[in-house]
Length: 127
Image 1 (tube, rainbow, N blue to C red):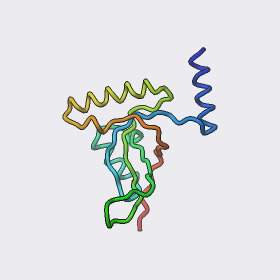
Image 2 (tube, one colour):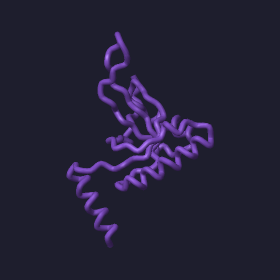
Image 3 (cartoon, rainbow, N blue to C red):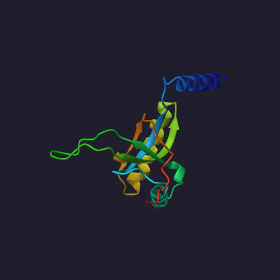
Image 4 (cartoon, rainbow, N blue to C red):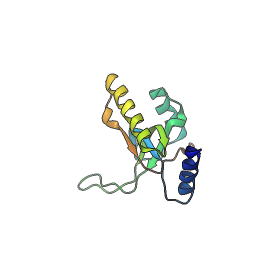
């Protein structure tokens, strides 16, 4: 019963804008253009995961370097877990880091963040 009360409190805080879930994510890439559904499907196939695990965060203006203009970027992540319990997110991130390290990947690409991710990836618009 206590767990249900805590979940209800978290959902109420989330609805009021007072709480964001913790996300254990793996950084995949950055794109200068909005990520299309087709591109997300290619990324998911490359990673061997469902396309639903591919989430996007649209960054604000990012300084690219001296002499270059600021630009928006769409950061592509693989969402491994989303929860209101930081310790669960941290534990999942540690397991994913370990798996990546054992497979020769970059464990530094996995972290726990509080970001407003979007899973609604833009459909292709033929021009």
